Length: 226
Image 1: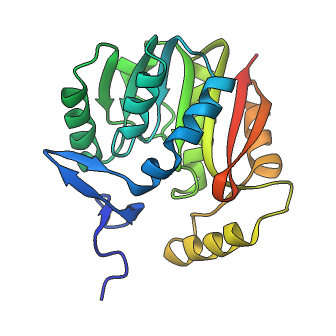
Image 2: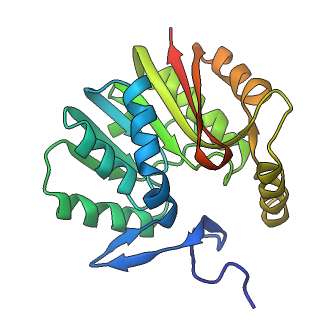
Image 3: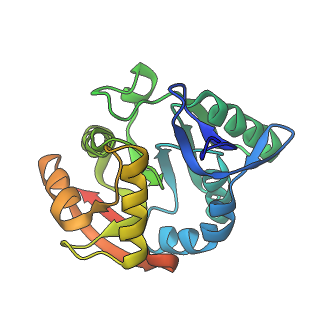
């Protein structure tokens, strides 16, 4: 029996999300987004621009961008995802929302050095990525920081949400999750903020602004471009 049966999968057959999703009229519903969206919106409101342009990397179902723009209607949101099924869901959510200021979705592979002419020509006030870099090879994290360095305006911010370790310390639930991730793909894993992400930020002209504890041993981690 396929232990990943029912999960959304990428073209190579690997899960693109470790949860089973419902669908209505093309719109996918993520149980994890339903649980965490209010906490994420609260953290976003404290640390990120409430107006301007935000590029989301790995938009998944599209629900985070839809909900955050409902909370912060002066934000212009650019969706992206590498996965075809995810982009179909995002498009369905955009049609359902009927709101202005929802752009995309673009097919961005965050691990690449450039993300396509339509994105590279723009500059953003923020980049947002939720529950992505642990379910991906580390070169995706490297690519996100590189992209933030290229595409953020001065003073723009990068917002990451998910499970993280802190300077070698990790909650037991996150340690168990890390083990399970590596069992699925040795390139995946819970990333360490101080040991892995801060050096990436330094390399690309960003600095750590705040780490906000979130429910279930997750964090919102915010960097700013100098």
